[in-house]
Image (cartoon, rainbow, N blue to C red; front, top):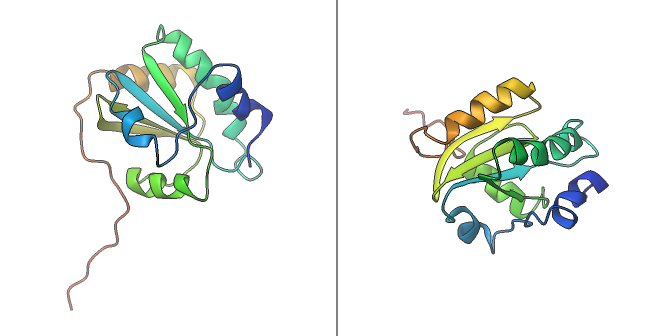
Length: 138
């Protein structure tokens, strides 16, 4: 389920809806790609807030961010959430030139968004945290 504010990202701003079928091609694009995981707007109170902020962030960085939206929270979105290892919605996952850089979860202050995203342009790439279960030796 989505909301008008989340749908607006795809209809008015032409952000692609990211699924398992187009995920790899999307994140492989050159530059800083950002996957917006709103979660279920019925239960995630900040989902629509970040949906309003995302176009403002894209504009603040002179369109150097390439955003996509993962709206299928319980299907493909759950698999991608596990792949990137974040635990809270809404989340912005940053991929630069096909490599994971970092994640910003929940709503942030504007200056914090600017600072953290600016760092994503030059931060070293790393392995996404992913989903892991601690292994205990008996």
